[in-house]
Image (cartoon, rainbow, N blue to C red):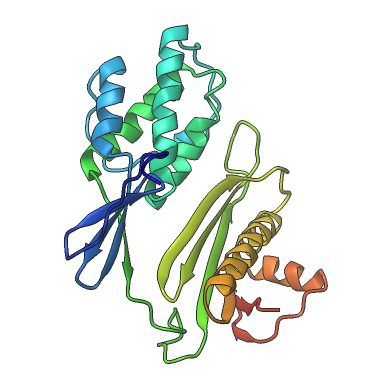
Length: 267
């Protein structure tokens, strides 16, 4: 192998040691594993400040104005290129940082034609990253069947999906944002923040689109886990009773209900 290829390897030997895999840093802890984005916050901040100057620290990544209409002038060709480069780095960070996922998603829509207002919003996000620093997602040692309403001691793994949506909050195109967080035995597995492709006419409709999107991801995750491990029980949670009623009216019959807002989606 070494005669034809460049071979390298890393090994988790003890607490505090780390390896890199798929642009992520995996740090071994005494009671679990810490998943940290491979693209460091220092690199993103330094790249931004190199082109656009210092950014002041911020307490939040964005505010509601990020969804208002943008009528400011476009950036120059050079600044637009730098804007896209920073967003490219942030896309690698956001997949493991749920706190900035929505802001990065909104700012990435401006990549074809970045504007001065988009740059100001990006500066606020960079200031938040500068304040929060490098953070990761801790994965504890899994207990079979543990979750929101279960304490474990089961023979199956539990996949829980939490979905929600804002209703036409974006003032530019009036499309809602669907979000979902997937937990396996109480540990974070995957999260998403996506702009819906249609304009919802009610909060129930926007929540329903979010449920379907989260359910699709949950089915994919479930099949991957079944290939790797034992049987999987899937539950989906939502706080919109009207969307749940529409979901059931579509012909889907749950195997059992844990609470009015949670349905078992195993079948």
